[in-house]
Image (cartoon, rainbow, N blue to C red; front, side, top):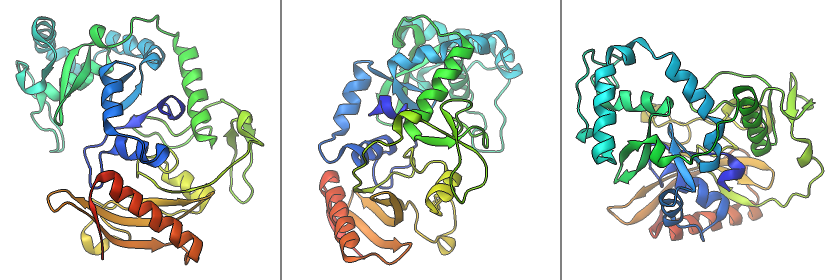
Length: 326
């Protein structure tokens, strides 16, 4: 599944379940256990890279980019090169270690708009990770454990930059089926696919798309699913609106009075349509999954209602929480 999707995004919000686990449950069903993902990461068949979990074999598609970043360090990294070397030395001797156990000998503190002021070691580690010098070796609770990248990543030859970009675009299109050749630049993972696939036009939607021809004419068996807000199907909000006429956004940063669907609403898929949002929160201290509302974009028929209710019950069972409505 992760090879097909190309990634699982990591996000600290776990209003229902950790992001990566919720994607896995939506796609694989209640047979999925979070221990499966922990085991895959422990065996290094998957690795954590820049807020995503990816198949270890895919690292070869990023190594040329990492090497290029090492040749053009930012001014802040250059100013703190002594601290970078201190971190590498400590990890070589003792790793894997959490960031709090690594020396902060930065000569120039990290500056930001406020979110990450003075988080010198964390920011330096993330930049070193993007350069392929360090990598996440595992987690201790929510803390990342860092080690030298050479101990974590498979020792495979890097793919030349142009070919790596082409293969990443092709794999992204295979995961999405249809996507824009070029669209708004976003962090972590692009939404567009360059020249991958073949050109296509979507009736009623302006502009040209790219489609994976291997998926045209394939049989489709739809089902009902509660999606993570970070699922590949829904993560590009503009694409969801253009292709599915589905208006959606995360509202956890909005004041409660301005939320339409809830703090962490889950998109509802039924067959080949996105039909609504589930406003639910997992209260683990109370041992309940609290369903506040099911927002129907169009009134549900009896069959849709029954299928959605079945998925809500399945979600509560998977979380091992009592279901409480209203």
